[in-house]
Image (cartoon, rainbow, N blue to C red; front, side, top):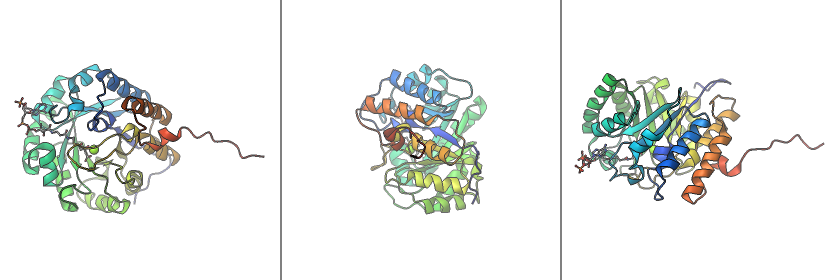
Length: 308
Ligand code: HMG
Ligand code: MG
């Protein structure tokens, strides 16, 4: 166990503009996406996945990928990244000015075929070419292992599969691998056991957790990850999100809830939780519903001195 010391820094990777919006039936205008991204950066987010360069026929809500990538004002000290599923996606991302990309592969064969239209091994083989280009062009590479804690088609996923896929992504040159609980089925105990197994092969400072809150356990799972030594967590403003190729997938861990918990534990994120909550509420108004993030629904806590 490597629970964090008071004042330790924890990194938050905001995935709302990508994971949050990829499953939305309400069309969000490009300009509104740019306002969202800039609002999140204003709130102190320094790592943000702004879109994905996937086939727009597969993911229509992100069809404006290149316009979003070109439209955002890049700020110093902020890492803007995009998910890419193949070389074409990489080339489109690089042409739109992206200097960081994330590759995704599932630990389970069936989800990978539904998501990427290829087997796991074929996907990793194709990624070698993407990784080679990224290395030569100085583009930063991140990896995702989807369905790491359970697959909507195959059920439980053997831990050695997850470890093997994570190792392969690191060997391709990913600086970090994010383990995805794609359909929100993990428990805190499972997270601890997974990280125990993973760290025999991969140092924990290269592991992130990407937790969906489908069954209400994302924050508990983040805490389990934190106590086991993980210091990088993906989250989505307002708790938006879901994978269209994972039936039953729901929102990601809400950024504002994660930040509230971390700051309450005396950990540093550099993020203003109230500014994130403002963005969440603005997105809720655009989408015409209250987003699941708890903090943005509750609002700030006006701590008062005890009554005399
Ligand atoms: P495919 O149909 O097998 O591709 O799709 P293809 O190579 O046979 O090409 C077919 C057509 O797609 C061609 O166009 C290509 O040019 C085009 P046509 O000649 O027919 O006009 N094409 C593309 N267009 C734009 N961008 C591209 C691209 N590639 C080919 N990159 C493909 C294969 C990978 C493209 C498809 O399966 C796809 O787009 N999949 C993405 C699915 C997706 O975005 N899923 C959600 C993200 S993953 C996730 O949410 C999980 C995560 O959050 C972690 C977690 O929660 O666990 C990361
Ligand atoms: Mg996801």
